[in-house]
Image 1 (cartoon, rainbow, N blue to C red):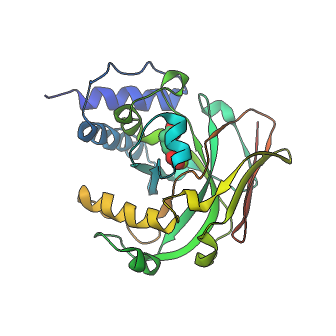
Image 2: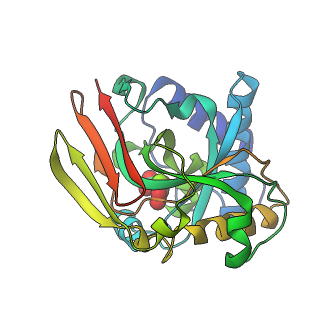
Length: 254
Ligand code: OOG
Ligand code: MG
């Protein structure tokens, strides 16, 4: 079945650019493979406007996220530089439709990832790790989507905030994770929720990239996936994510 990849991609890109939600596509509009083609085309629109790709993100690496969104497969999408929000800065939420935040771990790669790698090899490919938060913003009304829809929508990628880099790879095992709004706990979990250990997200990233014959250059970011369900953001908040032994990361909203 041939579909209008360009049309779906343009619709999603417009929705993101103008922060305007679109209805979900009709069920069965495209396959998962076609969804990744749409995703790639929509990223191409961003690249054509001068955005550069700075890494990739994994989604649904934790049960908490799968349960929240009612899907059950690992997905991945692209990160571009304008998505990076400075740590400690104030993020203007008017650029988003219905933003949510989730606690994550971010990796910085030190070697090109151009083949599947094992868990033992993964650490060799990583320069540093940092506590991070992802801002997701589905372009679909009411944050409702199928797996195909969300893949086409670049896995709801919208923003990320990365904390202090370190080489505390041991700290990734079952570290306590929490998010607080204005000093009050909103959600808590463990890095163990991310595929048992977030380092496995690097292994999965390598597998997924190899599966579509792509490579990821050294110096790229890999977001491991949310450790807890995502939380709605509103203006006027101080948002802080703490990952024990790894550190904290924070931003403000307006
Ligand atoms: C899709 C993105 C999932 C994660 O960390 O699991 C994701 C969504 O929930 O809208 O970023
Ligand atoms: Mg995420």
